[in-house]
Image 1 (cartoon, rainbow, N blue to C red):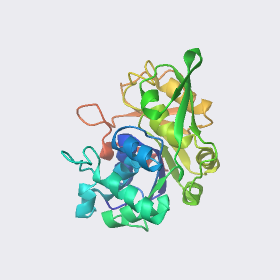
Image 2 (cartoon, rainbow, N blue to C red):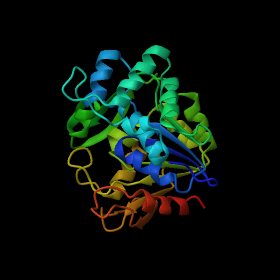
Image 3 (cartoon, rainbow, N blue to C red):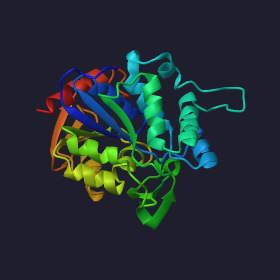
Length: 296
């Protein structure tokens, strides 16, 4: 996936499949793209590696490298999502194992992600995938009724989440993240699970502060629908209110036309057709067209 020859510098913040969609969208209009990726996932292959090796979560980083590489990537890029079966490494994604090995041998998680990006074919002058933290972290939540929940997977299933934090609060953020946000013409949050993908990255203190200080326009891309767990019953306004509770103030919101009720978010909302024909995920081309207009 080759970024546009000319265009704005875009920083996309979040995790999961939603962040991958934003990276593909940004390739249609941005000249430089930086992904700032949540590192608190504790499920599946990622969770097993974190437990065994005490490392930041590799899964969303792997997915972003693959998304950034796109059709222009090397054969290795196309194999990053391959999952082993019928062996001692059953269920592990190849990209996760590569990141784990590179981290173990280099002792530098940012360098490990950079090396995976290089061998996948990313252009280092125009594309960068960065972890939100370089230390292992745990996502914790406060929910209605005074409930406290630990772990991203558990929070995903929780109704009534009010606030999330990343612990330890002293987890280090790469200097390159702060620099990219300072230079950004546009900062895109989402789409993705509000608490366990978007805020899992944006709520890290140095990331949140850098987003606030950035002169780039902050765009929140709202999910197509509320989730059964963490955002059950949410309209667009409820998503924005949750961002504000965590110190994040978007300049504009992008929402699929006719999907979630808008409510009164107190910020400009651009309603547009930005999803694939099946209506379940964002279309990178359509989303890219809308985001490009919001850089003006």
